Length: 213
Image 1 (cartoon, one colour):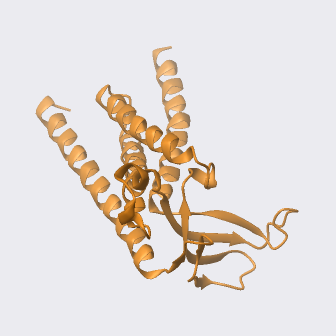
Image 2 (tube, rainbow, N blue to C red; image 1 turned 180 degrees about the vertical axis):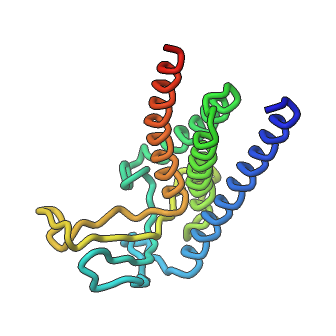
């Protein structure tokens, strides 16, 4: 590909990735704020007072819209602990810096990897925004200082799935997948794309080795 055409193609891809990040980030935040504003929450018991049952009485999958506050990370790890807000907010900031540096150094060399980079950036940005903002909207936040409200931040999860056919000793009524959100979904898709790229990249390397032989 001639150099001007290659430069134009890279510019188009960059614009696409930026637009994708903005659109998915806005989708993530708007969906979370819809939940916060429309699903009442009992702060004394940490329970959602409204559950919208979308798919029920299915033998395969049940789906509900709920409101869950997660101070931990994926699958609720660290949820409710005193150290989680400090650690995971710091990890997310470090992850954003690291992802930016890797992108600048050309680590994401293919379109698939660049797409995965955009998705994981959305995931980190979306959940980090929750940790930075949501604590300031808790009841009684106006009486607390800035740092305390920052520490009280949490991630809003609302997509709730369970699988009645997967019965275990811990889940006799069927396996319940931890609630998640749009940002979490972006991270999972990105992880899948990274995994796919590992296999396709290995095949391409083998093909090149055969051609040289």
